[in-house]
Image (tube, rainbow, N blue to C red; front, side, top):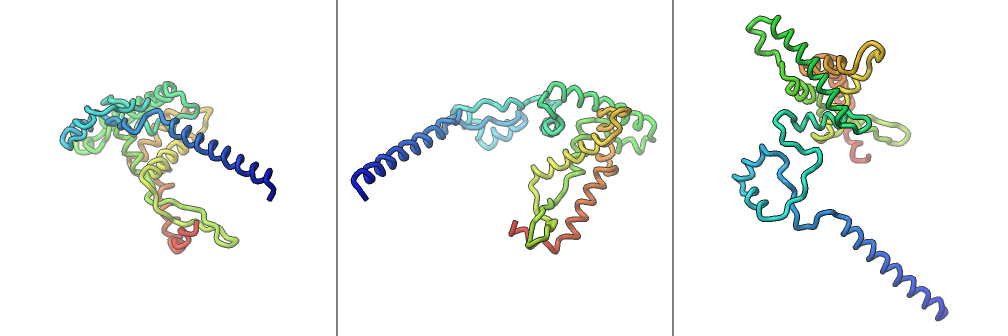
Length: 233
């Protein structure tokens, strides 16, 4: 190796080292908050528990990050409603999605009140008239307990049952509900009417979404012999 080649190699190594260290410093400085800032308490209902555990007093003495833009302390807007709204939106226009969901809630309230007034006093206790409660119950009723992964082994693709996280399970439930509501005669049936009926049926453990959930679980049960392929995915 000549002297000029050795010098060029050393210069290249120094330039690369400087570039790498600069990139690392840039990556560290990209965070808006330094390590001394702590996350805020998500909801005001958790403040009471935070005072018991001492977390509330600790957070009063340290800088706190800004709250998430979607965070709310409203007693009329549950976190599950916000998550459902995120899946419901197509173009990110929250005010339009909230207006559509409120109209769906009005239809659900009207349907349930008609059932309530027609029912006997003994059956009225089992009729839910709160739309928020109906939506939350519908999402949890349709939640799958397992996921299905497509695993290729050799030249074949197997549907392998696998564990599923709670976050993913609730997302699949919301997606199934919205897919069932959107699969309609768009000329004669509005999304509000379709979604209201789907949510009420799912909250009562009936309807298309519950059938899809049961079929999903049936497939997991039938393919449990392929569970050992999951580690190869």
